[in-house]
Amino acid sequence: MALTELQLQQYARDGYLLLPKLIEQASLDTYNQRFLAIVEGQVPLSGAMKVMRDVMVVKGAVEPETKLHGVNKLFCLEDDPTLFDYAKHPQLLSAIQSLIGSSIYTLTSNVFNKPPLVDGRHPLHQDLRYFKLRPENKIIAAWTAILPATRESGCLCVIPGSHKNGLLSHDTPDWKFLNSGFFGTSDVDIDQRQHVAMQPGDTLLFHPLLVHGSGRNKSTGFRRSISVHFASGECVSPRADWQTTGHTRRIS
Image (cartoon, rainbow, N blue to C red; front, side, top):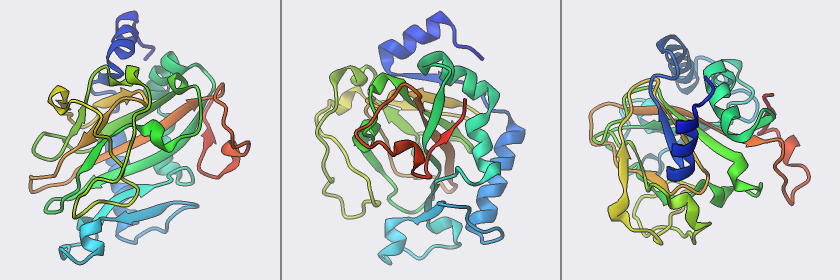
């Protein structure tokens, strides 16, 4: 699925592009079942994979009904062939290559699991805050809904065009409950936020400087998605070992 010129222009203007129904239901079901099997201990963690528990559960503020209710995300999917198949999905790869070129690596990979009845917010931030690679226009995130992501369940929100403003200052929000590693920026006009509701298979591609975040899950179900950050083989870093950390994989 090579992107059209109109789609390329939209991405350049807004810093993101929504591709409806990019990933078929059969693949989503496979990713979902694998995630559930890992969280429930039916299969072991692979390689560097880790399960992150929600901060409210860790601090004892809530008692999860099940293991699944206490999980915020599963990360480092590279050594799990079932989940990492997402990063190699032909439709997704074609779209990614349209934007950053044919030679690509993965940087980070996650299954995000936003349970009900916990805070679960992710402050407005830019992903480039976490990366040393440059140039930034050769890095891109792909975020695919496995389950419906609605305003009620805490879908992503974005500030269109914010990728043109450079890297903003980030700090730790003064929240009672904040998941580990979550930083936020206040150098934005929150009235410009747009909430991106997504159905299963819908995929959002976005620039690492795009300001985005997500709210609480106020529904009774889970908001679950799978996501990978890709970088072009043209990217460079002060860390000469960035390609051999065990958290990256060459795709093409």
